[in-house]
Amino acid sequence: MKKSRVILVVIGLTVLLISACSKKQKFDRALWKDGDGLEFKYRDNMLDDLLQNHKIKGLTWKQVQDTLGRPQGTKGLSTYYDIDIKYDGYPPSYMKRLFIDFNQDSVAVNTRIYEKTNRKKKK
Image 1 (cartoon, rainbow, N blue to C red):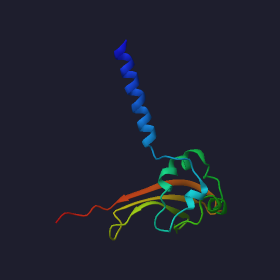
Image 2: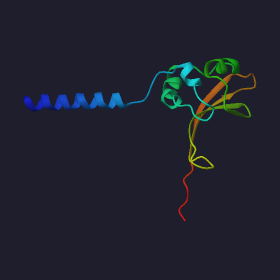
Image 3: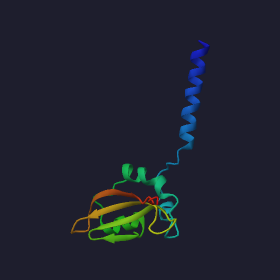
Image 4: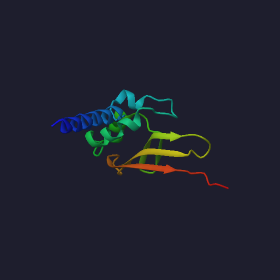
């Protein structure tokens, strides 16, 4: 009986520690927009909630900008928001972006995550 209580306590503490260490947070429009143009420290923590619980597909270009702010760039019918970039030289060693694809009527039809790691080659 004692052994099972100890196991339950250990499991409970482990779950508590794991959940406390999680940096995930709910999407917050003000925090999403908070950044200096090079670093947006809250975006990566909010990305999962944004994509799972907030409807982006079907929004117009203006509605997306009202929600997420001005994008960092556009490529054709897609726009992107920087999520995380590690600048330790050029090109950056790590890049994560949220792309939103629009149709000809400026309605969002798709979201996708772009991630790239540039590992320096050993000489």
